[in-house]
Image 1 (cartoon, rainbow, N blue to C red):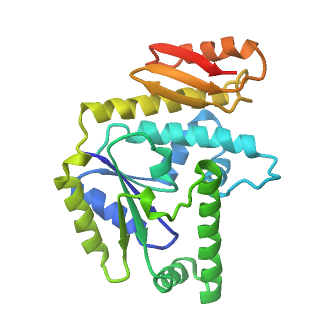
Image 2: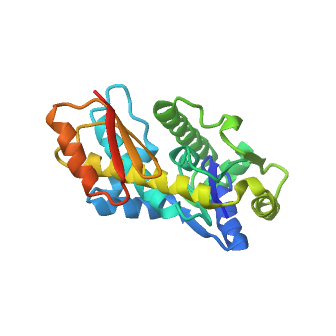
Length: 265
């Protein structure tokens, strides 16, 4: 059974759908807070981690590199948590953070603004005007964040396998539709090949997070990929000595069968 990611705007009903879908399928349901708690085990602030995945960096942001570190930790925690499948994840940009792994059913939930305003008012005790401003701010931040990291508009339908509009659909109906896709569509079966891809993604993210937190390599911003345990690191080093430091860090990451640093300059 696959991984399901639920992407949604604030107060669009995505959380309720994720929780119900997980119950129907017998999957685990994981939200952002669970991943933040796991990522924070590396010794960073949960508050800073949340800020890194919610607030897009500005052009003058002094903490852009810290955001890179926090996101590396968050992605490593997420991939480790979901890599065996049978999980529904609802949180920010799960479909993008798990890009390259299969099978991930990428779901986008949308709802009319009036519905979102009402939910926001009830939960946060805001006026209608305050609720509109809150929702618009959250949507804008998410759009800027995904544009900065991936160069894409998070609302583009081509980023998802299914887009569900709750304007004329109840939560139960949306859940039944998604459960049917998971159960009946063979393209979302979690076979050995898919498990290998997930294991490779988790391994690459594990090394990236280790490099981001090791004092000797924490200033680097690199791309890490893995294919059946053969890990490649691409990017720019600050000093020639960092080649050896990367090898040292990689030696402490279980699962790496060979390390390729030819992509470093």
